[in-house]
Every structure is written in C-alpha cells, then in structure tokens.
Image (cartoon, rainbow, N blue to C red; front, side):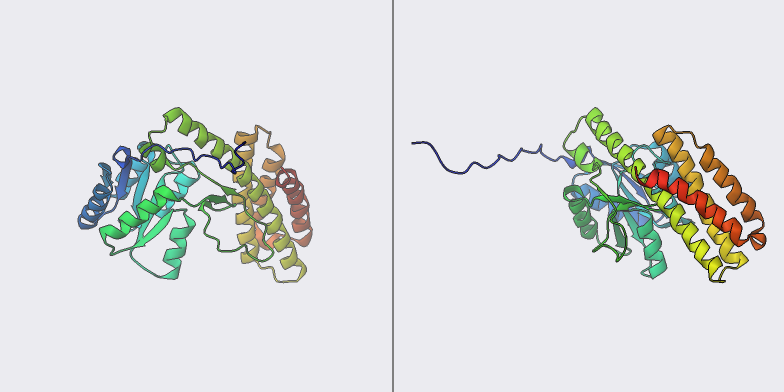
Length: 303
C-alpha cells in the first residue's frame, strides 16, 4: 500500500557556527570599557579584536579594516562618531557597509538617542553595561538581524513597529550578515556576490527615495509661498535640502544607472542661483523649480 503520509521538506542543515573566525573592531576611548568589551567578545569565542581609542584611529580602522562586528562609542574625543557609521552604511567608508554594529551611548537624552539611531546601528547599548549584556545582544544579531530599509537620509535596520499613516511603505532588504557568514565559513566570493546584489538593489531604492524627496520638498515650498508663510530663512532651508538631495541623486543616477545627468545638473544650477539670494525668490521662481522637480521625480520614482 502506498505511503499516504504527508511529505514535509527537509530542513537544510546549517554549517556549525565558529565565532573564533569573526573579526571585531572596538572604537572606545576608555580602557576600562574596552577591557569589558574584550571580555564579552572572548566569552562568545571572538579572538581577533582590533581597538581604536582616538577618533583618527577609529576612522582609519573603519576605512582600512575588514571587520564583521563593530562596537562604536557615539562620541570619541568630543567628535560625533555617528558620522563614521553613517558613511559606512552609505558605502563611502570601509569595505563592507553591512558590518554588524552596536553603538555605545553615555546619555538617555532623546536627541542623543535619535542621532544614534539615525546613523544605522544594529543595536544601542547604554553605558555602563555588563559584559553579559553585550554578549546577549551579539548572539541575537548573529541569529536574527533585522532587515534594512532605505530612505533619502537613512540606511539601516528597520525599526518601525508600524507604517506611518499616509506614508508609502519602505521596501525591506535582507542584508548579508558578515558575522554569521564568517562564523559559518561562507566562501568570500559567495559573500561578495550577495553583498553586491544587495547593494545594487538598495542603490535603486535610494534613487527612488531621493527623487520622491525632491517632489515633496518642492510641494512644501510651493504651499508656503502660496499661503504667504515663506520667509528668506525657510526658503533658504528648502533650497539647501533640494541642493543636497539633487546633488546626491545626480551622482547616484550616473554611477548606478549610467544615465547622463544634464537635466539634474541644470536643476542644481537653478537651485544654487536662488540659494544665493533667497530673499529675492518669487512665486514664479518656485513654480518653475517645482515643475522641473516633478519632471525629475517622475523619471526616477517609477523605476
């Protein structure tokens, strides 16, 4: 008689995890805290640990090293270290924008926490902390890393509990986990392929988000002029935002899509002309900027 029992797919066995292969970087000015971090990393098997206790050393290590796990204090020698991780996530610093990271904070103040979250760390840890706290966070990050999202000004883990009302849903990207890959002995070429495929998809999403931001900023500027709320200061701020977003869009369109960017560069030229004399910007100038901005936005938001 035929076996009619239901067939279930057999789980693919995963290679054993050996965290002794993982390479860690600790950027922390306090020797005592570095000692506690090293103890926590040793306790989970990580032996290759590089340290940086100055901002310059941290920048150099992030730029030149091939690390899988990063512990970074938010402030080193009165320098804002969120800049380092933001640049890494954007692909402007270091060799792997997907390094697993924990940022250390010395304050619970909302602006401090918000600035840390906005640079894209996988987790935050408040000083003082015990080695066990760091060990537990690390174990979770090895097993269950959050997917990333991309906006016009953020690349990092998706921390949304729910979509904002009226907001378009941001696409999620299941990014490589270098700690897990190194611990399982994933071949370098396979990891690099996964990384490049993810980077390409995220680059296209970034272009869409930048283009949508141009449209949004132009609409806000137009409304403020129409309702008589525009001032030289608010106009200047909007133009600065449009300048920054349009400049990045131009570079990414050229690099990622291989398109000519003459239209975007012409738009940038107009923005910079108006930015030099914000008090002289008229409603007709804003209408012209908005019309051209919508054309650019429409070209790339629909990709």
